[in-house]
Length: 395
Image (cartoon, rainbow, N blue to C red; front, side):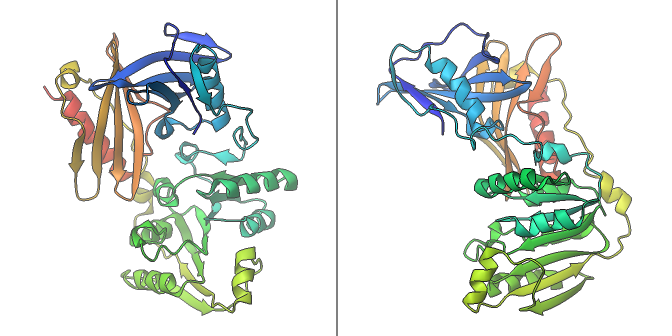
């Protein structure tokens, strides 16, 4: 995590601009004067730096607030370099030259927000690893948008280089939770969804991609007759997935063992040498009764009401927690810079939580927005946000 340490941090008067960065304000935490957030704007994007005065160590650290940063690490380091250069008691830092990885920006690397209004027919691979199969899909389906979903950043960097080398313009990569991505997609747009050799998580099955909800969302997103293809070498994972499929009231699928496919990953080749069994399950999407409703139910927007300042000034019982059947809201803390209030939040689905900062400016007119854009409008996030508005607007 990029940061610097100083015996005593010196900051200019806010706001100030330098080298394309605007440092907007410093907002101390309401119940801990040793912690504060510094809002930085760069190219119409926003992120927070966290300042923490460490009393016992007699120094102060300024670092990236990870939960609010969507910018490449290199950009965050550049912002920290500006502040570190102003220090007269600098102790240490890790802000040396940026690596290509830290400056990673590509037209083919997308955010979740880029898919909120996505309507193109597509092929989706979840957890693409080395990317061999995903590249094969893109090369052999040039008129179809291919989407690779992955959380392992080295795999993302590797395939982005391959996209450039091969000159592919129909393949997009997203670093995200596939379960959340599918929930915001409209119905019947996918021509295929592939999950090849997912991490089994046999000791922590709640972390698995393949769940009852994931299966139902996949079948909704798939076009009629198209396939959700699970391929695994783990017999426990495969049997559990098969059990989930059989729980559906109506389903059509095929099961195969040790059948070859066109592209073999290096991991699969290794497992074959070890004579491990390879299992396939192909589940076919059937015609649904109300696809229009399904396609529109995720179009709900995050809505704001007029927030009463007293509800923030008078509330001191942090953290606040609300846990419901299928969603939760956690208000971690409050930060304030004059008329600007910032709430640190975590909410949504228990297995797919979203972290966010809500900024409220009590001026005329009152302005409210989530730093770095609205949360992904999953059903759980919308319910949690609605409850937050109830708390902040009550008379």
